[in-house]
Length: 129
Image 1: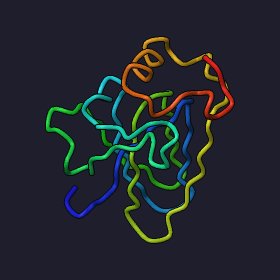
Image 2: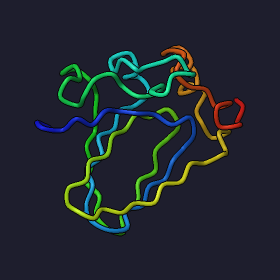
Image 3: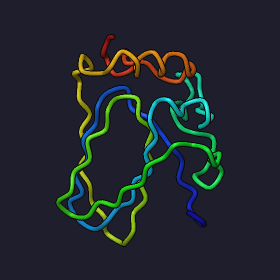
């Protein structure tokens, strides 16, 4: 991951990403890794919900997954999962959609998100849990 300055972020709802052109690498971490990512807050801060660590600075014991998507591939992330995307070539295009239906968010993820810090809440998007 040398040379990258990408950081992890999180969404309060499920998200779907479809790569339309090019290739992108996604680094993913479940909600259980929140405490290791040093997420910025409070909610009112412009960088709230982003890690203060670059990918190179993540603790070695952070449980992360890596996947490379190419044009036509889709990625569905549960609410509360952390992610970072890195374009692997020029001219990448992707389409992202956030679900307004948080009813499918597991209670465990909701609990982990709320315990991790004051950096996000579904009400920020007009949602409620």
